[in-house]
Length: 637
Image 1 (cartoon, one colour):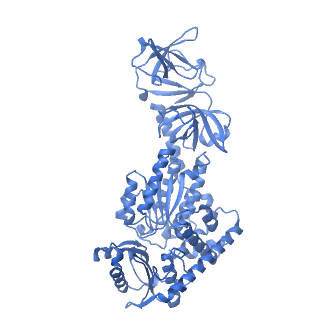
Image 2 (cartoon, one colour; image 1 turned 30 degrees about the vertical axis):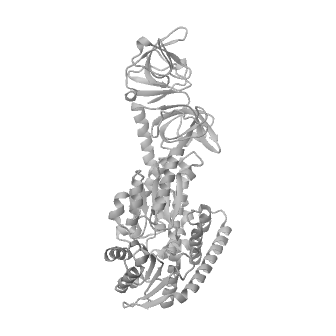
């Protein structure tokens, strides 16, 4: 329990209660016979001098001491006498400080984080949990949450010296200080910080936990379109939204890794927008969004060891230098396959939670035990036609429903970028049309994003991508001009690449009636420029589908890799990879993707037998009219 001493004549002694005085409490706030939490400020031959506030001190005579103490030690004392001259006499009380009820005695108003802007200039009292401790060149900054928000509390000992060194992460504390603004953000200039114990700590923790549970609940929003297949995923997405909101409330950094393609960006950027808004709503520190969220593109469709070692190193540096918690990892449009497991096991060494939203064919037995949440349409008897962008737009709206109007065109861009043949595409295209985007506009946006992502490489390019996708963009004319510029250059580069590659494309009719096209992208396509080998293969494939109107398989290969595209042929690329691993020992086969879109790797010396085995499997595959493209729906994985 916490009591305010403002206006009181003193503390009324209560059986078994230990009073903890705020720094500004005076003799008017004390009472003979009461117990107080004291700190030793001096040791002499005949006892120890103790402070029970900045203004109230006294002596514990050696005859009344139970233990041996040094300056800075805490103990519980009984105020046995207030002498006429104002001197105080104390006796030590033999109790366990962590087991007694500690009641705060403070001046100022009780306050909540969400109301601090109404208390600027006032002295307030705030109770909550410490969620970050950052030592600066000046003060120590304690980030404290109370369930309604998180506020930085600056405590100064001396420049660069840790204030309140006994306070640790996750301690339940009481802060007393003045509310001020700094660089446009509210913070508390700390006069006193005390770790709560016993029933007082338990009461605050229960109150904070209840508020956090309520605040973490995602918004109950209706999907943008009616789609029975999507309903199977709604609860899974809500669970991810809840985990992400909890991370924000815990001041746990979120690292979002996504496939650097059109669908991956249509999935990750809306979530970034939603989380930035929620972080700004919860945290009084105006810089919190840039510290607590990072979007990180991945070129590979799985979590590479190069990426995970870099992510872990940055996380450990942030923990040491800035007092941050270790992050939550959120994988988007990748992360579902066995190839991800080595990186996940590296994260497991540090107990870093991992969430995945993906639509690639999963290996649930391999990744499932390593994930907190795994959302994938294949886990509900659906498939890749539900793109990650479609799912993550709904996820973003669960985190922050106010951004709905900004996102209405994004699922259609995601679907076109990833060649989705979902029944829902017509509805998404109609929704985008109502928002002012024609199908041609959406295709150009997807092409512009793909082109920008290629040149950004490992940079997230937040501002540029937001302008291309027209999210949070305050200049519609700039958006249109930017998309036209980027998409036009992208199409020019694609056309030049295909025109140069066409004479080297090998064609072979397969026994099952499909056309097989092969291209050595290492030797007959420009390297280190746009389009990359995967995009080149996809664009060549689309051209051949349009030309023939028949089932088509396209292979773009290099020394140690092959990119596969298929329309109208019932392939299972992840299963084919598994079979090749058993059938061709020593080939180092790995890879996967969707059923009809994917890539594989192998050792360069085994390229010929691996590709020959692939072709044989493709030749034995059945044709499937349902998997054939609508001819003019092009795009790139």
